[in-house]
Amino acid sequence: MAASFSPAVGHFQASAERPVHPRSFPPLSRLASSFSSFVQPVLQELRRAPALATSEMAGNLVKRASGRLLNSIVELGFEFSDQPWLLPSQSNFEPVEEIAGEAVVVGDLEGEIPDDFPEGVYIRNGSNPMFGALQSASSVLGLSSETWLEGEGMLHALSFSRSGGCGGSNGSAGGGWTVSYKNCFVQSDTFRLERRLRRPSFLPTIEGDATSIVAALLLNQLRFGKMHKEMSNTGVFEHSGRVFSISENHMPYEIDLLSLETIGHWNLSKAWDRPFIAHPKKAPGSGELVFAGASANKPFLVLGVLSADGKKIKHKVDLRLDRSIICHDIGVTKRYNIILDMPLTSDINRLMRGGPLIKYEKESYARIGVMPRYGNAESVTWFEVNPYCTFHIVNCYETEDEVVVRGFRADGSIIPGPDLGRNKFQWFSEGFRFASNDEILDEESNEGTFFSRLHEWRLNMRSGCVNERYLTGSEFSSELPMINDSFQGLYNQYTYAQVVNSEASSNCGLPKYGCLAKFYLDEKDNTKTSVQNISNEHIKVKRHELGANKFCSGAAFVSKQGKNGEDDGWLISFVHDEHTNKSQVHIIDAKNFEGLPVAVFTLPRRVPYGFHGVFIPRSSNE
Image (cartoon, rainbow, N blue to C red; front, top):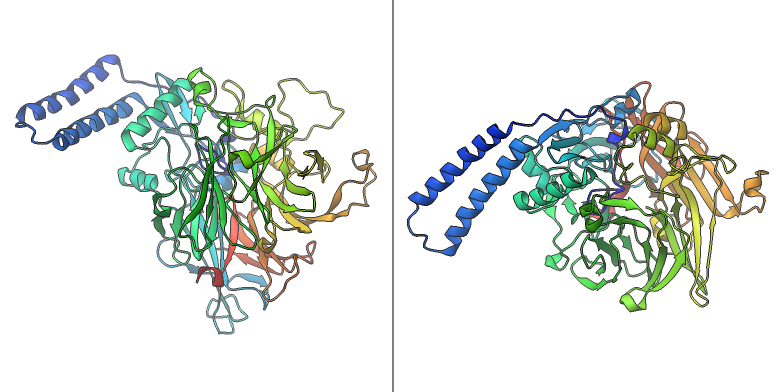
C-alpha cells in the first residue's frame, strides 16, 4: 500500500508512540561561521576563474556552489534520528541484512511439494530500512518523519526448480525438487545515492509539521532532483516476461528474477513521465497492461494502456479529476477500465495552509468510474457511491447491464496516520479494534476505522443506479486480496485474503494477519443466525488458521498446471512464528483450505512482515 508521495500498500514500523526526539540545533553563531566558511571558497573559486568561456561552465560552477550550500543547510540545520523500536510485539517488523552471494538451499521441509506444483519463483516485497530504522528529521522548522509505509524495498524470494534428484542428503527439498531462498534490496536511484553517502540524506516528506515538510520537499528537489525517496517496497508484477518492483510514487524497477539484482528503471521509451500505480492489471483477452499515475499537480490522474509485448503505450489519457487522489489500484473488465475516486487526497495547498499533505476527507464525495478501454475523460461513466476507503480491488466483471466491482472497504484510512498532537500508538491501536453497532463512541474516537470488509458495488450502465452491500459481517477484518489471475476481469467465484488478528494488531499498533480466508462469492452463509445476517446476504467464508503467535504476509495464489478450475491450485505465504522467531513458507491446498499445509519450509533467515507477494511461473519469465 503506497501513497502518491510515498511508497506502498506500502508497509509497517513507525506506528508505536515514540518519545519526542531531542531537537538540539547549532547556535546561530556556529551557523553563521559555517556558512561564512562555505562562501569564502566559492568566492575564491570565482576570483581565480578566468573569463568563463561558455554559459555551461558558468552553470556548472553555480550548480556545484549551490549544491554545497544546500548540503550545508541540511547538515547544519537538520538532525536525523532513528525511530526506536519499543515493543517486543514489533520485533518482526525490524529490518534484516541482505544474504551475500548465492541463494541458500532450503532443506528443512515438512510434507511434500505436490507433483503438479509449477517451477517458478515466489517473491514478496516489503519495507526494510537501509540504516536499521525509519528516520525522523528535526530542525527549527519542526519535525518530519517517515511513516509506517516507508523504508527501502527488500525482495524475499523462494525459487522452485526440479533438480532431477531424489532429495535428501544433498540439501534439496526432496521429491526431485531444489528450493532456494534469497533476499535483496531493490537498488533504486535514491537507494544507491544514500548507500554511497553512507547516511540518511533525503528529508522525510509525509508526516510531521507542515513547515518542515514543505522545506523537506523543496530541499530534496533542489539537492537531488526528486522530492522523495524511491522506496520500491510495495509489490512485484510481471509483464511480457519481465519482472518489476513497484511503489506508486515512481516508475517500476526491473528485477532479474534469479539473482534479484536491479536492472534499472522501466523507461517505456520516455512515453510515460509520471508515477506508476502499484497494482496494474492485465486486460482479459488482449494481455494489455492497464495502469495509471497520480500526481499532486494537474493532471492529477492519467491512465495508460501498454501493449501486450510491453513495447508501446497504446493509449494515454488525462482523466481530468478536480482533486489529487491516492490511487493504489485499478480494475479491468473485458471492455472497461475501473477507476476508484475515493476521498483520500494529497493537497499541496492544504499543506501550505498548515494542514496535512495526505488526508482522508470523510465528509467529501466518492465515485467509481467505468471507462471504455481506449476512452477519454468524457467517456467515463461516474457512479456516486457512499464514501469509502478501498486500497485493493478484488476483481471486476460485466453482466448484461451491470459492471460488478468487489473490493475491501473500510470507513477510514490507515494512511498516513493521526493528526499532529494525537497519541500515535493509541490512534493505531483503536483503529484495529472493532466497535459494535450499539457502542457509543466519542466523536474523536478512531475505533474500528481500519476494519476492512469485502464489499460489492453493482453499477447499472443503463439506469445509472448503484447497489452496494457488504458481503461479509463484522466478525473479522481482512485485506490484501488475491485471486486466480486467469479470471482477472472476468466473472469469478472465489477470492482469498489475509485476515487481521485484531487483538494482536491493536496491542502492537501495526497490522498483523493471523490467518487466511477463502471467500465463496456466490454461496450464502447459512450458518449464521445473528442480527447482522438476518437478510442472509453474507457469503460463505472458510478460514485457514496458522496457529498461536503465527502471522502471514505476501500470500499469493498458484495455479495448478494443466487444470482449468478456478480453485485448482494453492496459496503460498510467508509465515513467521513469534514464539520461536523462525520464518517459514506454507503451501496450502485451495480445495482443502481448512486442512494442514501440504508443505512447510523453514527458512534459514528471519523474514520481516511485508506487503504484496506473487508467484511467477518459470514459463512467464522465459
